[in-house]
Image (cartoon, rainbow, N blue to C red; front, side, top):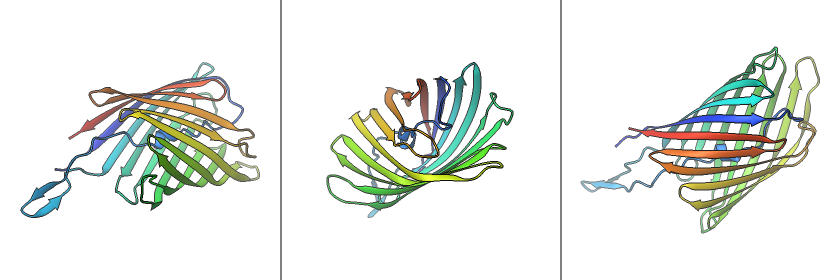
Length: 240
């Protein structure tokens, strides 16, 4: 039976002014929402999967910064196959606190290798693009390698980050980060991220996110970042 999953996210963020232009790593946003396993169904000697691995993600976000709001919308597509899952996402934000209002972004992630055994190692490649139209463009490309130790997952991230302001020269640097996640249950996930200082951001950054399932297809995510940035994300899964 074909299933389509729509995830709607409402994000409310309260922030103090940042030194760096970007937010935290927020690997919680890249973690798929838990979906119960649907067993295979055998029909006249053939095995047919009853679950569609494709997920459409819709996210609506509002950022509050020093009295100004920046609404943002993101749409994504995730293909959750066993060995090589991947996802694509695109976003648009309206920056009411700037004379240049438009911000666009895109992300692509592909799992290059999936290991076997109890530690379930993997290696992903992700590329992120962000443009504050009329101000600057930024590209990040990195490898994300991870292992699982029971309910604990550990990730090491390494890549390149580059920023090009309009009318200015390009700045680039090595981009190392660490991420850890812990599943208290199938409906509760804690993620901690740390990014080391680089020449583009000008400083290190860290963030934490907690996801809690509240039933009936709903889950809530609490977010906290450096510089007293706090967020609340509400997700809803609709299936048919």
